Image (tube, rainbow, N blue to C red; front, top):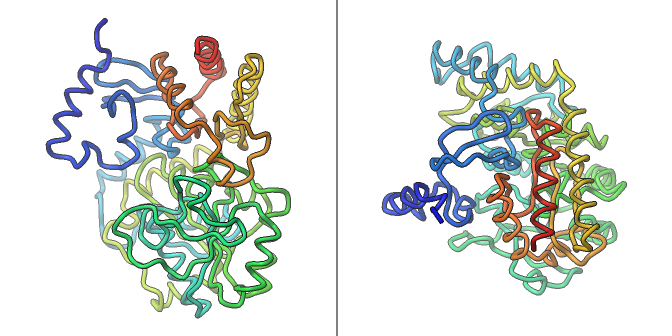
Length: 431
C-alpha cells in the first residue's frame, strides 16, 4: 500500500535539519504519523502536500471562526497592505478597531493591541500589580494563559499526585528553564469552598485572579452556575482585579465574548485568535480607571509590530462579517448538533465517551467519569485511546486536535456535521 504521507515525511526529515524538532510550535510535533505539511486551505477544508483532503475541526487551534481563506478578509488585508504594512505610528483603521471593540465588549473602556495572547496576558498581570500595589495572584490548574515563564505553571501535570493535595495545590512547572516560581496561589477550577478559603487567607494580598471563563484547553469545562459571579464578588470585596483570558472564548461565544455570554464583567480581559481570522493580533481591554496606568505611561506596554495593518484590517473585516450575519446562532446550532450526534453514537456502542462544551467549541474524550469539573478530573481521560481515534479520523479525512478540543466555524455546513459524526461512528464500530 502506498504511503499517503510520503511527501510530508520527506519534508519533515528535511525540516529537522534546520528547524528545532522540525516545527515552530511545540504542539505541532504530535501529529501522526509525522507532522503533516499543508499547502492550501479554503472554507472548512485543507489539503496536505500529498493531496490528502481534510474536513478541519482544528481551525488552526481556533482562530479561523469564519473558516480558511475567507475572501472578504483576505481582500481587506490585501488592500490595507498595499497602502503599507507597518507604519510604527497611528492610523485611522487602528482607531476604528479600538472603537468597535469598546462598543462590543462589556469591560472594554480602553484597549491596547499586541500580537499574541501570551503578550496580552503578560501586560494584564503587570498592570494588575501596578494598579493594586500587590504582587501575589491566583490562577487555576489546567488553565492556559500562554507560554511565558510567569504563567507557565500548573498548566499540566503527569498525575493527580504531582499537583499536591486538593486543599493545598502546589505549582507545577510546565517546562525546564523557568525562572523562580512567582508568588502564586493555585486552585482547582469550579471549587467554591476552596475559592472562598483562598480569599479569606490571601484576598488582601491578591493583585488579580486570572481565569479562562471556559476551561477550554483541558476538557472545555464550563463554569459551574454562579462560579464566575462568585469570582466577581470576591475580587470586588478584596480589591483584586478579575482578569478573563478570552483568547479562545472572545468573539467565539458572541461579539461580547464570554463576559457577555455569562453576564459577568471582569476588570481586564485579553483577546486573540478569532478576532483577526488567523492574522497576528491580540487585545488587552479593561476599565478606564485601570487602563489609565497604561495611558499615562506608568505601566509600559510596547511592541514594534503592534497594530500592524494586516491584523487590524483582518479584525475589522471579521467584525463586519460577524455583525452582519447570524453567525453565532449557526455556530451554536451546528456545534451542539454535532455534540449530540457524537454522544449518541458513542452511547449506542456503550463507549465511555464524554462530549462537553458550549457548542462553538467542545471537547470529546474517553473517561469513566460521569462529571468532569476541573483539571484533576481530566487526568482520568484515556489519552492513548483518543490519540488512536484522532489517527483513525485522519485516515477518513477528518482533522482533529489531539487533546480533544473541536472548533466549529461559519464555513462548516450541515453536511460537514453529518460527515464528521458518521466518520466517528465508523471508527468506534471498527475499534
